[in-house]
Length: 278
Ligand code: TMP
Ligand code: MG
Image 1 (cartoon, rainbow, N blue to C red):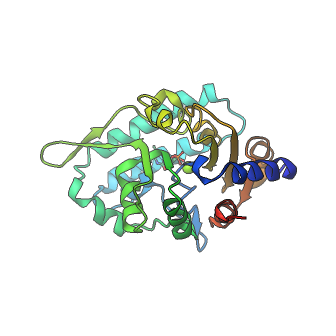
Image 2: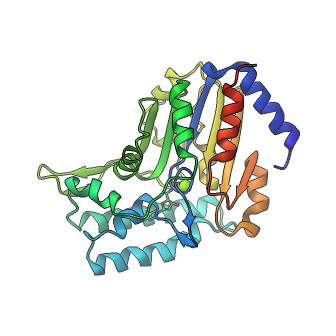
């Protein structure tokens, strides 16, 4: 934390205003899902498709080449957003085009997720269950693949009715074969109002003036831009990769920065404190 007193102040205000005023806004890939396990990288929702048996060897190679070219650009602290945005659109468009040529079946999604190495962060059960029990809305705003991340949450038995997802959804034809992705395209750096069809979701939640925001990328900081009334906002950032290089920027932007922490323990602790009646 750059400013522990500030963090203490926000958490006290969130608790004082009460659970009825709280909403949680979270990224999915590498925020709710793990970045690594046992020294290996865990897959993003896109990688789950890329690595699956339904993709040809040639397709896999092309998708990996895209990742190796564009991922360093995505996380490069020395490039501006203006530089990155068009390149991210290019990455997502090329990846989605390649995936759409692979004849992926809607009916195969559950099996593809089951066979993948994806893992939610330790403590996910408590996280999802606490929010559900306390009727706290959870908005998952993801530049990943909506169908895949929903399936991950479903298979983990934590897809509760307090969850709303905005993400890139697959578009299947009448035979259930992937033919493209629905619009608008969401990439790392347009996670803001511009891709929320309307701000209806946040308008409905206009009384939820306390926000806990969870992300792992600098692009996740704008996920709450559509919230109509913000009184307290606590931004928690997972710093997964190139920690030394990114520490300064993350500490400037996130109230709490969790370095190489594969758990939701800090978030769960704050929620537990908020929910405890004193
Ligand atoms: P998000 O975590 O901000 O929702 O972003 C999704 C992540 O997906 C982002 O870090 C880049 C990654 N990604 C892939 O791994 N493969 C791909 O083909 C694409 C387009 C994105
Ligand atoms: Mg992420």
